[in-house]
Image (cartoon, rainbow, N blue to C red):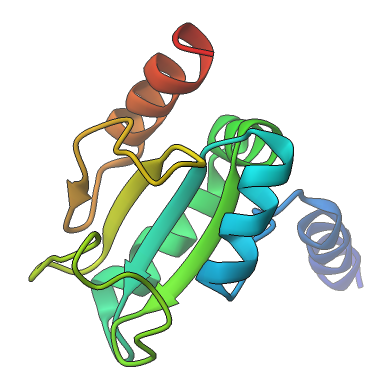
Length: 133
């Protein structure tokens, strides 16, 4: 009985946890970035990509990353297979890749290619989103 209550409590905490508010359309995210002046955080993934799923999970578990992304950027996930993004601009052979773009589609940091460790991602986002805005 106590174990079940414990699991229920953990599940309730998990449901209350803040998550990254990802958009699913590059064009819609770009319009939102242009209207708000916020940069875009673009996560380029492939279907059936374990490192891509790991990157999403690790980003969502880190409260500071969630706070920075939701508060300071327009976040969008695009898939290589969908091709609903500027392929020439966001070209990569490694997945996942994170891009930070200005509303004018200029790079604000070097893309993070491959699965990026959480402390490095947090540090890079803090440097770019807190010091340059």
